[in-house]
Image (cartoon, rainbow over all chains, first blue to last red; front, side, top):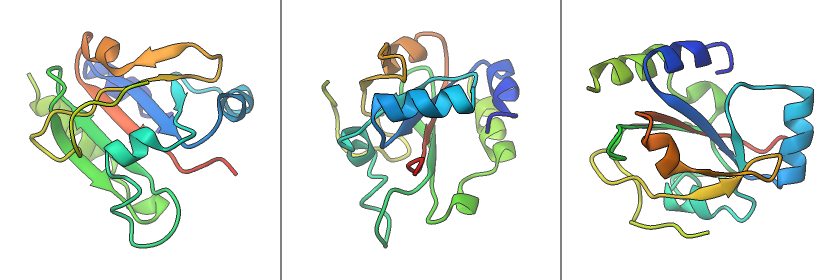
Length: 101
Length: 47
C-alpha cells in the first residue's frame, strides 16, 4: 500500500487509512513505520460500522477493506476482505481510478 | 464527530467523517474529496 501510494496520487487520488486504534497507537505506529498518507483513529469503530466493514465479516475482528470514492463522494468500488491478502490488489484500484473523470 | 448517510455500497454516497490522525490533527473526508477521488483503506489493528 505504501509503495503504491505514488501511483494513486499520480492518478489524482488522495489516500486515507482508518484504523481501529487510539491516536497514541497510531502515532507510535507512524513513527516506527512512516507512511505518506494520513492514518486516522476510529477507536470506537464508528466509521468501520458506517462502512459496514465489521458487520460484513463472518468472524470476529476488524477486516481490511478498500473503498474508492469519486470526487462527488460516491462509492465506486468496494472490497472487504476476510483476510489481509484478500483485499483488492492495487491494479484493480488503479483501474477504477482511471475510469473516474 | 458525526457520520452521515447509511451503509456504504457501490453507487451510494459515502458516509462522511472527520477523525484525528496520530498527531491529533483532524482529517475530514470532505476536504480530501475537494481535491479529487479518494482511496479509503480500513486497516486491521496494529496489535
